[in-house]
Image (tube, rainbow, N blue to C red; front, side, top):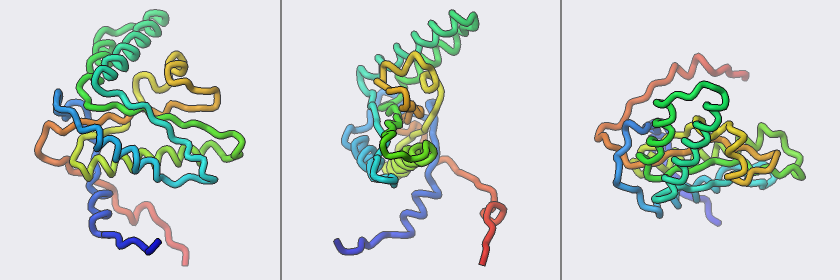
Length: 200
């Protein structure tokens, strides 16, 4: 294979202008084409992976699947919170209604291969880089997207739904929609010089 001719200016622009956009900025009832979601996932599949374990797995909810996700999340919250005596109606409604405002919700799963003998940190890093690839692709397509670890993420009761083994992890959900706003959010970072030490 010949060395690819990369556009460094374009990749710099995409990385530096990637932004999280949340449910309040989603355009409802105007779904993103499945082919674009496929591109997000295909690019995720090319993340770096030590020993080629490729630990990322995804479950995509869209259409009626969003209602299934919404029902699962809200019902598990109600069950858990009523048992603990801290049920909040507004939280229940948020967990029930917000998923329906997205076009697609992608569950992010770390499927561990214990035989590879890799530290957990390396596998988490691989899945995180896969999600970054999804983020950058979403930005390139002008989509609103964010990675969240709320709701079901850390609830043991959700694990059977995603067929997780003991060593696997649910690492949150990637929400995708068309943006309801024309203006692209601005970002800010503290100076790089405050975070880097050079040793020569």
